[in-house]
Length: 210
Image (cartoon, one colour):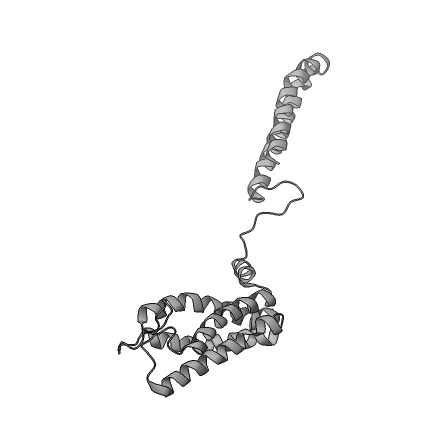
Protein backbone atom coordinates (compact mmCIF):
# COMPACT_ATOMS: atom_id res chain seq x y z
CA UNK A 1 0.00 0.00 0.00
CA UNK A 2 2.88 2.35 0.85
CA UNK A 3 4.63 1.69 -2.47
CA UNK A 4 1.37 2.35 -4.43
CA UNK A 5 0.82 5.67 -2.61
CA UNK A 6 4.40 6.84 -3.24
CA UNK A 7 4.27 5.80 -6.89
CA UNK A 8 1.01 7.73 -7.40
CA UNK A 9 2.49 10.78 -5.74
CA UNK A 10 5.66 10.61 -7.85
CA UNK A 11 3.77 10.20 -11.14
CA UNK A 12 1.45 13.10 -10.34
CA UNK A 13 4.30 15.46 -9.44
CA UNK A 14 6.38 14.35 -12.43
CA UNK A 15 3.56 14.87 -14.91
CA UNK A 16 2.63 18.36 -13.68
CA UNK A 17 5.53 20.30 -15.36
CA UNK A 18 4.89 18.49 -18.66
CA UNK A 19 1.29 19.64 -18.71
CA UNK A 20 2.14 23.26 -17.82
CA UNK A 21 3.41 24.44 -21.25
CA UNK A 22 0.32 23.10 -22.94
CA UNK A 23 -1.90 24.95 -20.53
CA UNK A 24 0.14 28.11 -20.95
CA UNK A 25 -0.23 27.98 -24.74
CA UNK A 26 -3.85 27.02 -24.89
CA UNK A 27 -5.44 28.25 -21.67
CA UNK A 28 -3.73 31.58 -21.17
CA UNK A 29 -5.08 33.07 -17.96
CA UNK A 30 -6.45 29.74 -16.74
CA UNK A 31 -2.91 28.39 -16.15
CA UNK A 32 -2.61 29.42 -12.51
CA UNK A 33 -6.03 28.08 -11.48
CA UNK A 34 -5.29 24.72 -13.13
CA UNK A 35 -1.93 24.46 -11.36
CA UNK A 36 -3.48 25.25 -8.00
CA UNK A 37 -6.15 22.58 -8.51
CA UNK A 38 -3.53 20.00 -9.49
CA UNK A 39 -1.38 20.83 -6.45
CA UNK A 40 -4.35 20.57 -4.09
CA UNK A 41 -5.41 17.28 -5.66
CA UNK A 42 -1.87 15.89 -5.25
CA UNK A 43 -1.71 16.91 -1.59
CA UNK A 44 -5.10 15.32 -0.92
CA UNK A 45 -3.95 12.01 -2.46
CA UNK A 46 -0.76 11.98 -0.40
CA UNK A 47 -2.62 12.89 2.80
CA UNK A 48 -5.22 10.17 2.29
CA UNK A 49 -2.55 7.56 1.52
CA UNK A 50 -0.57 8.35 4.67
CA UNK A 51 -3.74 8.41 6.81
CA UNK A 52 -4.76 5.05 5.39
CA UNK A 53 -1.39 3.53 6.25
CA UNK A 54 -1.60 4.81 9.81
CA UNK A 55 -5.15 3.55 10.25
CA UNK A 56 -4.45 0.06 8.96
CA UNK A 57 -1.40 -0.72 11.10
CA UNK A 58 0.14 -3.23 11.27
CA UNK A 59 0.96 -3.01 7.55
CA UNK A 60 -0.23 -5.96 5.56
CA UNK A 61 -0.56 -6.98 1.94
CA UNK A 62 -3.98 -6.75 0.32
CA UNK A 63 -6.01 -9.89 0.96
CA UNK A 64 -4.01 -10.94 4.02
CA UNK A 65 -5.11 -10.77 7.63
CA UNK A 66 -3.42 -8.46 10.09
CA UNK A 67 -0.82 -10.03 12.32
CA UNK A 68 -2.22 -11.12 15.67
CA UNK A 69 -0.46 -12.30 18.81
CA UNK A 70 -0.52 -16.09 19.21
CA UNK A 71 -3.16 -17.70 21.39
CA UNK A 72 -0.99 -18.81 24.33
CA UNK A 73 -3.62 -21.15 25.74
CA UNK A 74 -3.98 -22.91 22.39
CA UNK A 75 -0.20 -23.33 22.11
CA UNK A 76 -0.05 -24.82 25.61
CA UNK A 77 -2.93 -27.20 24.88
CA UNK A 78 -1.34 -28.38 21.66
CA UNK A 79 1.89 -29.06 23.54
CA UNK A 80 0.09 -31.19 26.15
CA UNK A 81 -1.97 -33.21 23.69
CA UNK A 82 -0.64 -36.76 23.22
CA UNK A 83 -2.47 -39.66 21.69
CA UNK A 84 -3.83 -42.27 24.12
CA UNK A 85 -1.73 -45.17 22.85
CA UNK A 86 1.56 -43.33 23.21
CA UNK A 87 0.79 -42.03 26.68
CA UNK A 88 -0.47 -45.41 27.91
CA UNK A 89 2.75 -47.00 26.66
CA UNK A 90 4.91 -44.43 28.47
CA UNK A 91 2.95 -44.86 31.70
CA UNK A 92 3.17 -48.66 31.44
CA UNK A 93 6.96 -48.54 31.11
CA UNK A 94 7.16 -46.14 34.06
CA UNK A 95 5.19 -48.43 36.37
CA UNK A 96 6.53 -51.68 34.95
CA UNK A 97 10.16 -50.96 35.74
CA UNK A 98 9.52 -50.18 39.40
CA UNK A 99 6.88 -52.89 39.73
CA UNK A 100 9.10 -55.69 38.42
CA UNK A 101 11.99 -54.66 40.66
CA UNK A 102 9.87 -54.57 43.84
CA UNK A 103 8.07 -57.80 43.01
CA UNK A 104 11.38 -59.65 42.70
CA UNK A 105 12.99 -57.93 45.68
CA UNK A 106 11.11 -55.67 48.13
CA UNK A 107 14.44 -53.96 48.87
CA UNK A 108 15.39 -53.49 45.21
CA UNK A 109 15.38 -49.70 45.60
CA UNK A 110 16.48 -49.65 49.24
CA UNK A 111 19.92 -49.47 50.86
CA UNK A 112 20.71 -53.18 50.38
CA UNK A 113 19.04 -53.49 46.99
CA UNK A 114 20.65 -54.23 43.65
CA UNK A 115 19.45 -50.98 42.04
CA UNK A 116 21.74 -47.93 42.08
CA UNK A 117 18.60 -45.87 42.75
CA UNK A 118 18.05 -45.71 46.50
CA UNK A 119 14.68 -44.43 47.68
CA UNK A 120 14.31 -45.86 51.20
CA UNK A 121 15.97 -47.70 54.00
CA UNK A 122 15.51 -51.48 53.98
CA UNK A 123 12.05 -52.87 54.63
CA UNK A 124 11.71 -54.27 58.16
CA UNK A 125 10.72 -57.92 58.62
CA UNK A 126 8.10 -59.99 56.85
CA UNK A 127 5.52 -57.20 56.95
CA UNK A 128 7.81 -54.75 55.22
CA UNK A 129 8.75 -57.31 52.59
CA UNK A 130 5.09 -58.17 52.02
CA UNK A 131 4.11 -54.54 51.51
CA UNK A 132 7.01 -53.90 49.14
CA UNK A 133 6.29 -56.97 47.05
CA UNK A 134 2.51 -56.28 47.03
CA UNK A 135 3.14 -52.71 45.88
CA UNK A 136 5.37 -54.04 43.11
CA UNK A 137 2.82 -56.61 41.98
CA UNK A 138 0.11 -53.96 41.61
CA UNK A 139 2.33 -51.68 39.56
CA UNK A 140 3.46 -54.58 37.41
CA UNK A 141 -0.16 -55.61 36.78
CA UNK A 142 -1.15 -52.05 35.83
CA UNK A 143 1.74 -51.87 33.36
CA UNK A 144 0.24 -54.70 31.29
CA UNK A 145 -2.24 -52.14 29.91
CA UNK A 146 0.51 -51.20 27.48
CA UNK A 147 0.11 -54.67 25.96
CA UNK A 148 -3.55 -55.59 26.51
CA UNK A 149 -5.22 -52.22 25.93
CA UNK A 150 -2.84 -49.47 24.80
CA UNK A 151 -5.64 -47.42 23.24
CA UNK A 152 -7.99 -47.65 26.21
CA UNK A 153 -9.18 -44.25 27.43
CA UNK A 154 -10.38 -45.86 30.65
CA UNK A 155 -6.86 -47.11 31.32
CA UNK A 156 -5.49 -43.61 30.77
CA UNK A 157 -7.94 -42.28 33.36
CA UNK A 158 -6.77 -45.00 35.74
CA UNK A 159 -3.15 -43.89 35.28
CA UNK A 160 -4.15 -40.28 35.88
CA UNK A 161 -5.94 -41.21 39.11
CA UNK A 162 -3.09 -43.43 40.36
CA UNK A 163 -0.40 -40.86 39.64
CA UNK A 164 -2.43 -38.08 41.26
CA UNK A 165 -2.97 -40.13 44.42
CA UNK A 166 0.73 -40.95 44.64
CA UNK A 167 1.85 -37.31 44.25
CA UNK A 168 1.23 -36.18 47.88
CA UNK A 169 3.10 -39.29 49.08
CA UNK A 170 6.12 -38.17 47.07
CA UNK A 171 6.06 -34.74 48.67
CA UNK A 172 5.70 -36.30 52.11
CA UNK A 173 8.79 -38.39 51.44
CA UNK A 174 10.67 -35.29 50.27
CA UNK A 175 9.96 -33.66 53.63
CA UNK A 176 10.95 -36.72 55.68
CA UNK A 177 13.46 -36.05 58.45
CA UNK A 178 13.81 -39.53 59.90
CA UNK A 179 16.41 -40.69 57.41
CA UNK A 180 14.26 -43.60 56.23
CA UNK A 181 13.47 -41.76 52.99
CA UNK A 182 16.20 -40.59 50.64
CA UNK A 183 14.88 -37.07 50.11
CA UNK A 184 17.27 -36.23 47.29
CA UNK A 185 16.13 -39.24 45.28
CA UNK A 186 12.49 -38.39 45.84
CA UNK A 187 13.10 -34.87 44.52
CA UNK A 188 14.45 -36.36 41.31
CA UNK A 189 11.47 -38.70 41.20
CA UNK A 190 9.12 -35.72 41.41
CA UNK A 191 10.73 -34.22 38.30
CA UNK A 192 9.84 -37.36 36.38
CA UNK A 193 6.49 -38.02 38.04
CA UNK A 194 4.81 -34.61 37.86
CA UNK A 195 4.95 -34.24 34.04
CA UNK A 196 3.25 -37.64 33.74
CA UNK A 197 0.56 -36.49 36.16
CA UNK A 198 -0.15 -33.37 34.11
CA UNK A 199 -0.15 -35.21 30.77
CA UNK A 200 -2.34 -38.05 32.04
CA UNK A 201 -4.89 -35.79 33.73
CA UNK A 202 -5.11 -33.43 30.76
CA UNK A 203 -5.42 -36.12 28.08
CA UNK A 204 -7.57 -38.42 30.21
CA UNK A 205 -10.08 -35.95 31.65
CA UNK A 206 -9.72 -32.46 30.13
CA UNK A 207 -8.91 -32.77 26.45
CA UNK A 208 -12.07 -34.65 25.54
CA UNK A 209 -14.29 -31.96 27.06
CA UNK A 210 -12.79 -29.02 25.12
